[in-house]
Every structure is written in structure tokens, then in C-alpha cells.
Length: 338
Image 1 (tube, rainbow, N blue to C red):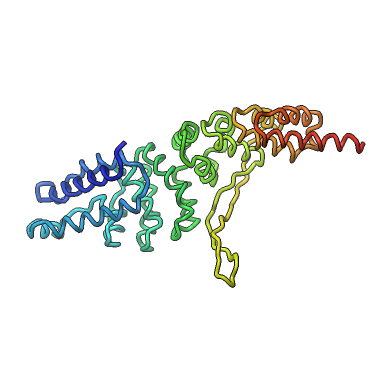
Image 2 (image 1 turned 90 degrees about the vertical axis):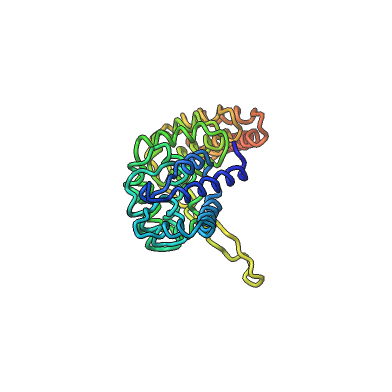
């Protein structure tokens, strides 16, 4: 994979090619093929930086070009293009959103479009909200899934997007095809903040009926642990936003704390079955979750509690073994008090 400097150089060259390709021969649309090719292989990170770079390079190219090209760029019949999604002119950002009902060329440009939900101009945010349904419908599901994975991890830090708009966006992508792609991504990813992604997807019921499969087969243990916890608790939780809380008003100290939201899920899996499955998971991270819910439900499990506690007490993980010994002590105390 190319490093950021190489990607930046490629983008700069592609923008230069695009600017110089705008003329009457292509109805002032320009040729974006090089730019689309370059951005198709980019990771969807540091998008604010790439937006600033694109705006800067377009301005630099406009000032560096000849008088004739400058004049042609500002002719009344000049066509809007996908770069206008990050234009410094709010009118152009709004106009390209309202004009583009066909699919977006790749995941990078779709990410830039979706980020307009957090645009600093209210009219642009409204345009993004109104036009996204048709754009998403006509864009490849693979692109939508890739952008969704990026967006959900990060959007609790967006200050201008409304909670209602987040839900509208989630409703747009609540299809079986997207659900299967998301499930595959969550289960196969070996790195990245997949537990946070699963939490944010939990805002909708798109993956509720796949939680058992994710809990059993996801590669990352923290993803399996999150899925098991959700099944045990019959709810999904996620970070809704972050708010500043005073720690010491005298010294002006504040702390940014997460605001947690939740949603009940209707997935009926026998509690003992979940315990037995999670108790033999290959990761101590998951077995700790299993032991935690054993502790919470000692009274209702009868003889099964001791069998599981003995298994946990012999676990190779010190934390899991400690939880198992704790349950055994509680069971012995209960037996003595009878």
C-alpha cells in the first residue's frame, strides 16, 4: 500500500490533469478518470485533510493556469463535478448534491458526500439528507458498506449532525445486502475498531439476527465479547455523543465523557446455552464475559453454576480463574447457610 506522501502526490497530479482537461471538447465536464482511479485505492482516513488538500490544489491550479483556462472555468455553462462536494463555495456544494442522483464513482467520493451531513452550512446539510437516499440506492453496496464502516466509528464526534439525521441515514442502508456485507466485514477483520463499529450498527436492528453467528465466529475476540454481552443483556449499547463534565470548577478542569444510549433486542437464545458457548471460547476476553454473567446469575443456575465455576477456576487466565474461585466461594457460603 502506498504511503500518504505518494497518495498525496498522485492526487495532486490527478487534480492537475483534471483542471487542464476542462474545455469545450468535453462540454466543460473535464476528465476525472485519473482522479477516480487514484482515490479508489485510498483508505478512508484523514478525510478532513484530503478535503483541504483538494480545495487547495484546485485553487492553486486555477491561479496558475492561463487566462483562457481561467475564463473557461467560469463560463456559465461549466458543469459541476464531484470535486464540488468539497468546494469552498457552499452554493456549489449544495448544487452538486441536488444535481447528482446517479451513483457515486467510488467509496472515497461517497464518504465526502456523507460528510456533508456534518457540513458547516445548514442548507448543505439539508441537501445531503434529502439526496442521500437516491445516491445510496444507485451506488454499489460495497462502496456503501466501506463508507458506513468509516462513518459509524467516527460520527459521534460530529458536532453538527442531528440524532434524527443519523437514524435517517441508518434507515437508508437497512437492507439485507448491506447487512450481509457488514456482517462479513465485522467477522473477518483482524484489526481496527470493529467492536465500536458493532456498537454503532446496534442503533438499528440490521444485525440483530446475526449476533449469535458473530459471537461464535468473529476473528477479533473483542467483537465476539461484545456480541455475547449484547445477547446476555438483550440490548445493544453505543456511544451517542460526548459531553464536557466539570471535574473541578475552581481550577477550570473538565473531562469529556461518553453518553451511552441503548436499544432492546429481541433475540431469544437460552441463557445457559450462551454461558456454555462463551465459557469455552478460545479467548480469555470472551471467557471473562461468560464468568461475569455467571456471577450475576448464580442463584438461578442451580448445579450448572458449580460446574461452570470449577471450569473457570481452572482457567489459564488469572482473571477468569479468579472469577471462577469467587463463584465457588459464594456457592460454598450458600451451602453452609442452608
